[in-house]
Image (cartoon, rainbow, N blue to C red; front, side):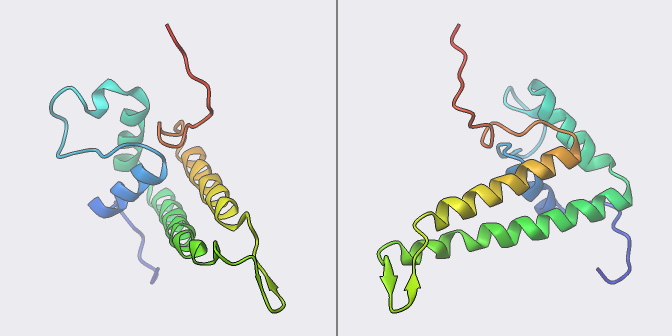
Length: 131
C-alpha cells in the first residue's frame, strides 16, 4: 500500500474474504430464507467485515493477497500430473495436495484472525451428525 490507511473493503474484497473463509455466496442482500441472519457465524463474519479497525483491514488485505497467490498456484500444478520425471527433474506426486493443504491452512488462519469459525466449505472434518 502507498501509505494510505484502508477504511473499508470493496465488494470484491468482501466476496474474497467470504469464499476464502469457506462461506457460500452472500447474494444480493438480506432477503429470503437463505441469508446470513439464519447462520450465526455468517452474521459474525458480516459484522466484522463492516466494523474492522483500519489496521485490521490492512492485515486482512495482506491475507487476501497471500491467499490469491496460493490459490493461483494450484491449477498450474496439474500440468505435471502426467510426468513422473524428466532428465534430473522428479515430480512431487503430492504437489497439488500439498498446495491445497497450504492454501487451506492460510484460509483457516484468516478465519482465526477474524475470530470466526471456518465456513461449511472449509469445514471438511469428515464428521457428520445424523439425527
